[in-house]
Image 1 (tube, rainbow over the protein chains, first blue to last red):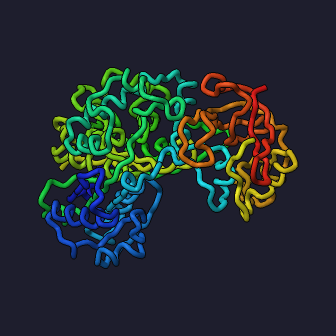
Image 2: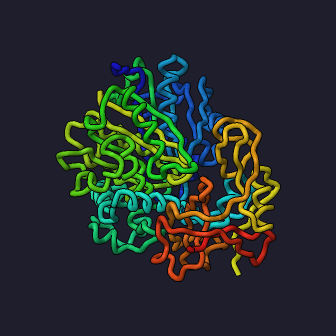
Length: 395
Length: 137
């Protein structure tokens, strides 16, 4: 299929601080939208499409437009956890191609660090019963333990090792150390050692939920940002080079009797996105893959088609995921959720760093980067989750 | 005595399962229209949509599909437990269930994928519902 270039990312903003007591989550959203519009050379009144996951106490489709003071023609409140933003980008691409709107905004804001929300280790709370909670809450499975169960099965079936998975933490930390905002984040969040790390460092960090070590787990930070997606006509007049949206895929997966826990929703969303974009994984320069944990990246590299199922451990070895490695793709060049920011729903940052790379603005710039993939994961990798894939190209 | 979180009712999908737990029965469903085993419980078949489901009682035998040992849980109900194993168990009747593994000295060393396990109903310090957990056989 020929590449269709109907919509592009034209404005971006990432909230620089990862611990910020001076603002609310909702203020992060609104102020990031203003800065992303400024980045594009567009104005508040140009916005006619609003995409929102309902986080940040903004009231979602009913409340956020009123807070911002805009009257969009399209309101999309898809909320599928951390990958909501890949879904939003996919929908904005469709809506723009259909002529329903011309300037779409996506925003995210969270105060997970200052509010001390234990995302990974909070475990189940006694709350109202639901069909899922009533069957799982008695067992005390934390979010991390859910991902850890995927890692154990992956190791069991394919011989994957912690040494191999640790390469993902090592590469993303190397990228983080080149990103001043990430370094500031690790300092503000009082990381024990703000430096590059080795495979041995990962192995020697304490185990949070077997087999996942502390340095295989993302941080909990504040943060947010915004993204402006515009039609090709609008994109011709914006300040920066447009970053074209070429293809997208959406999928869900959940615990099934006899199912394979080592395969994620990406196995469905990835091929759809690549087919629509008309490109293949071996052409990708930058892979922005939701690194909630090392195992998340390993499973998704396989499911997106960068390597075969079970081979991610070998694939990531030898520093392959580093920004300056000849073979590529470069992984999470902003430092990722592991070492730059993770306020709970990281999907927006995957798109932001993809755009920076394809504009030539990353702090770990891949030389001549032309194609990027962003793949987000929302929910629990070993339970109910959604996966959203977006393929982007430089102008 | 254990003091796990209890199921919360009213909740129409899981009520019959938990009534079974009180009687020492591990209940699951099978579709009368297409024979698909349905778990976790609900009022329709996940394969064909039929609402004609039969309740059955499992023999409670199965194997560990995968597991993790939780070393840190900030929820008050689990904070004092020390390391404990959570797992997905594949029951011999063909359904997969999240549960806990009990009866092992050190869960970080003594739980294995593929290990055969048997259900037991663990009484709780507070709360009327015993919780189905699994012990190595």
